[in-house]
Amino acid sequence: MNEPQLILTLPHGNVTATSLGIDGLAQRRSPGSGKHFRGRSIMVNLATDGEKPSFAYLDEGGWRDAYADSVQALAGVKAGSRTKTALSNDAFSCVPLSAYKSCYLVKTGGAVLALGEANQLATFSKHDCHERMTGEQIAHLIGQPLPGPRTPRLYMVISPIQFVMLSNLTPAEYAWYATHRPGKIFRQVMFTEIGHEQPQMAAQSRFIDAHRELAEKVTKKTKTIVFEDCLNQIPFHEWIGYRQGEEGGVYVGDRDRLVMYPFPATIPHAWERVEG
Image (cartoon, rainbow, N blue to C red):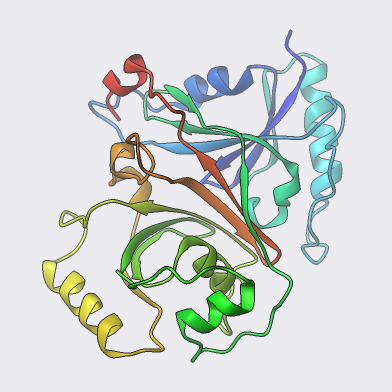
């Protein structure tokens, strides 16, 4: 039997103790063929010694004991269960980024693609934020170079909620803003950049209006296009970084840092051929 692991699955937000490994758990959780069903996910292997988490969960106010529940789930796997739920929901915002060991994209049928090792893109030491800041002010505050002409980027936020938006901020600027902005703050955020507009998700007028608003209002930094089950609607090959020559992948940030898990230099043909 494999050493028990703790796996965070997104966007569902659960943590599972398992002896199956990433591939085995992905197959077990698959709803079936990608030809007929939709069920993509992102799996994160968390740090553990097989008996307890090798990290402290972030405080949640005491409504559950995430650490004790994880220890109990790992003990269940040690005793012979293939999977035991440690946290059934809302795990993304209480698992610190320091607990992440590796990150994987999972297609509906259970095919797994391992992303590269995390690259730290930015650290944040200043935290004063107000709604009317410009992108240039944010870049200066966090010590990032100005991107030149600000062409709007299309981002898909994966967790803690799913939505697609246009933004004139770079990934580092957006990660800082999302984890600091008044009233709309995320404790942590996972997102990716999309290469092309997605007309299957919203009327063209939504994209046109968003472009116009970002161009006309200097302090407007983000404009939501749609709140929906985005992960299942935008193919992985549309994500920036999937194709060679593009820098991108899965971004994960909190108020102190931003890291990116890049796509591998070569996408395996067997994974590309699998639908879903």
